[in-house]
Image (tube, rainbow, N blue to C red):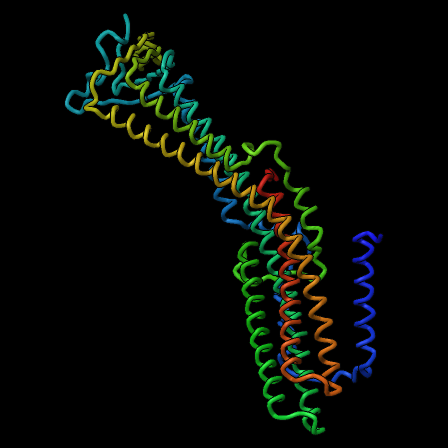
Length: 458
């Protein structure tokens, strides 16, 4: 007994033989009519075109304002951390001055009596120099502020990485869309040419007395539809070039070189970005988590404002004397204990405000985690869906092409109608466009699936 696979092969062979037999009954196809039309001229190329993924990526990184903003955010966060650190490090200050008493010119101004020392007097005008050194010893609020600034810097760095990932993904999407628009514009012209050839064939059939004016109207209507599709496709191509230009940091349309290797785009992207070992390592989740940590430490810093602080201060005071250039009159060291008592409720308000900021950061983190999980699951599934759609689109295009060829040959020998001719032509145009769309969707799906779980550090 034959197996199911053998039966399927036999049925397929019988179908092919039957089709060949039916096709052999038809005479050979006539020569294609020579058609000319101004709309068959391709869209002029863009003033500038990118030739490779590396060139496009370099232009984007050089001119992207979003990337500059993210880099500036890292710089700001680093400056905030340095400011927070300064509260825990020694602070030294020197102050010099010259004082002159206009009412009593002979009396040194601003000088404590006896500061000049035995046998010396302060000069007139009197010059003074003071140097102060302070060092925090116990300040929990300053340490919390430093931790908050460090977490904010970590968030800024992760946000820069996520910005690079999103810009890389966006650039890849725009490049795929531009190449797809270029290809669709070519197919639209092929479709218009075929429609014009059908119109010429129908007109010849009418002249030979084998057709009527209804056939002419039908094919001319099909030509009008093909022209409309071509006009819309050309405009989509121009808009895609403009979007690509904006993505690369230019205020003009930029095209893609015909030699651009779109199939190798995924491999080149893998060289620029690294896959993640765990989903929680994705930069946007890292940035959101660091923001929660920063907000938490910021709230703790405000709460620590209720606690006393302890510091050490040392001051050296000197003045100009006669005789001699001058002398240091005093040098003291003091321990300073600062105890907050009442601030009018401002500290409590600050604690409440930063607690609200912490709650908002936690909500943002949870929302980002949910969105990322859904985005990753959707990206993984989209590859399988896109592969299936490409397979079905190839089958539909092949069937539409076979149907159009047989319908046209039937019409040439008077066995088919103009309605069938128009319908088969429209179906073929749509099938070819669908196939192009599905093929580029597959490339885009593979890029999305990789970059949704990647980190771009370059």
